Image (cartoon, rainbow, N blue to C red; front, side, top):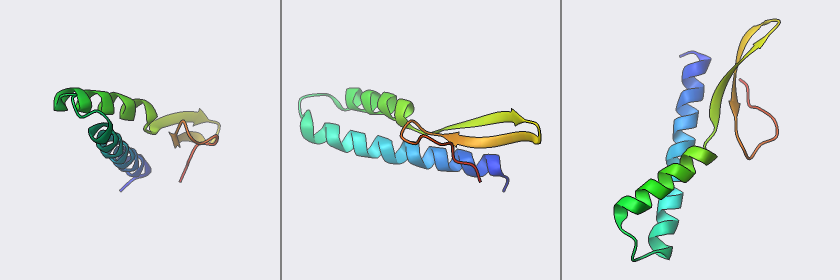
Length: 77
């Protein structure tokens, strides 16, 4: 498994965890809101907050990094 695949799996797991947490919070706070609206809101928020995979060109070649809004530095393996 190469680095890009690992980063994409990590990004998907972070998105899924954020989605479940936000959906759970919306279920307990907004009881009158329909399920589809809760899912749309939580998926939009998760897409904004989830980490992104970026490829950056350097002198030594192309590096793959995981950039997240909550961290100042990019994660690279």
